[in-house]
Image 1 (cartoon, one colour):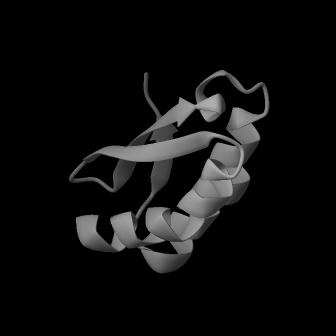
Image 2: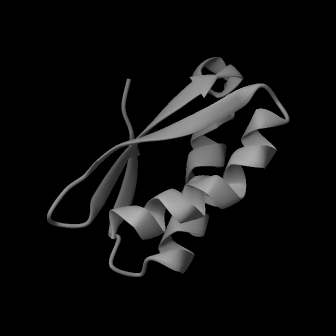
Amino acid sequence: MKNEIQKALNNIRPFLQADNGDVELVEVTDDGIVKVRLTGSCEICPLSIMTLRAGIERAIMKEVPAVRRIEAVS
């Protein structure tokens, strides 16, 4: 599952990097919770929660239906 999640992140990474941001996979729990860290401009952006939900979460859950939720960690 971790490889599929990383693949989904790699697909959206260019969009984040275009705005000097990025995302890194921190952890995948046994119960389907994916923890990611927003970096660069994404870390301090006031719209980062929208990026997390509408962009990152949607991309991951489309590729990996077993994922239940995405969480941002510091």
